[in-house]
Length: 192
Image 1 (cartoon, one colour):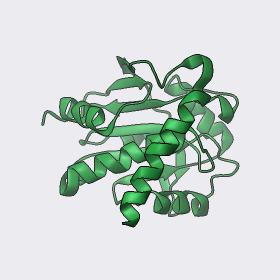
Image 2 (cartoon, rainbow, N blue to C red; image 1 turned 90 degrees about the horizontal axis):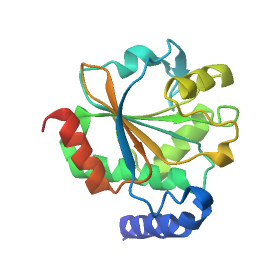
Image 3 (cartoon, one colour; image 1 turned 180 degrees about the vertical axis):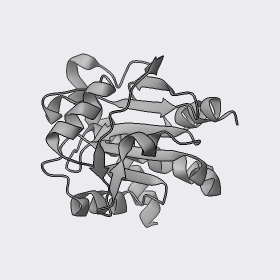
Image 4 (tube, rainbow, N blue to C red; image 1 turned 135 degrees about the horizontal axis):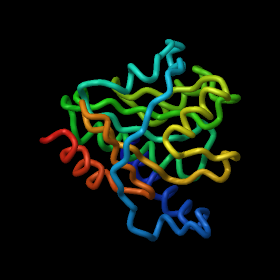
């Protein structure tokens, strides 16, 4: 019963948050997809457990990587993006270990490991999904590297990046996708 209320709450939150995106009108538009090549900066971030993560090595794995930019106190876009990650993990079941999910904080001044851990518990995230934060300068370098820089967290927008394993190409998705659409994108990059 609690799981059902959680899913209904996330769906309701997404519906209520849609008007907040204002002029971007991202909620009503079909997501824009492109294939890009990004050069990941050699920075060390920290995850929800306080573990130091060398980002470049962490993302250059033989598994597909799905990455987004969120923050722990967000009440608009981030809950919808995070619900999509959880739904993807649930759909994949035991295969969820075959993909690396990564959320990078755009609010490192407030997203401590404790805040990140609580956020992930709220979404019932399973192993294989990491929420990373770091210094402001390192986070800015990462956002610039992925052409995702925003000066003010209140101006952020829905963006998901999916890395092909092995070759460094990334599918850039500007806009929101359902869990089914994300699953289809995962299948394309993983060859499943």
